[in-house]
Length: 395
Image (cartoon, rainbow, N blue to C red):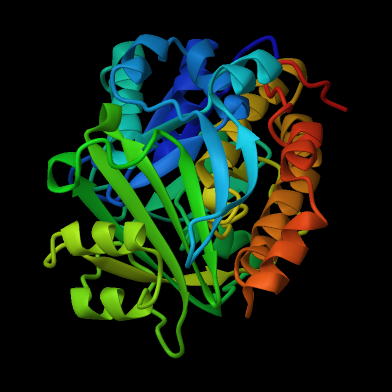
């Protein structure tokens, strides 16, 4: 486009902030509107494979990331009762050599803070708080973002990055209720000083069991161990990440598991155990109108079984910026963006859902047979980690 459009972004989560940084870096005028009264992120750890880290490095974030990430050596799948490794993917130097960037683990709050700093470095006045998006109006001349306090903000493009309960998506597609999967997620952060010395190597370990699995890895330079437990559970529908639940229920969910898991749970702060419902939403057939599009969880909420939720939002941000640069008008740019993202993100969502069955089996023999039939490293190398949002051909 000869004149770069003004972009409005609803939501200052990881996706909205990465989009803002990418667009500002490319010379766009950007305003981000965040409902919360202050910036911050809850939750615990996330994993970023090379397909996301390349984008973050391109934004100039390598130095800041290196101060807080952990680079795991391997991705192991283990039997819940014995700890036996039934399949392993090399990470570390191997991942970086094959895909052009490292595989890193990072606390949500840390990556969020790094992105806030980058956006404010590029434009100190970019982010506006206490500004909840409720909807939009659009015509051939522009788009108006409607805020809960009655304000109307005009721009050329609107990006709905307002999360799984997105009001922007709701206006485009109607109210789409969440479908409870029958599983919940526990999370706990354990300071390493509460654990035995040299307790675990710096790996991603997925412990697979009947109706249950757990994911364990380090954060913050190895100072904290991140525990996420994914458990079949009837009747729990609370979706928020800040809902405390009794430690005794966490302990009961992992009765009979390997002593490593018991040590981790016993070392957890009994007043800081959180649980939330895992919900599915139907894949969207399209994301965009003439001047409005979706990004991140607003477009493709996913289960955490492929470690690609934040990664997809980071990829989206890069591709959206490239599409706006490449096209002569906004409508064509948004069509190009969704055309190049829907198939990939839908596949990630579907494979994430399928992994619940792979990771959770009724018997050890069944589990081993399922993994024996798969080469997960080869599968993910072929299409997932090799994706390069900075250079992929847009068609």
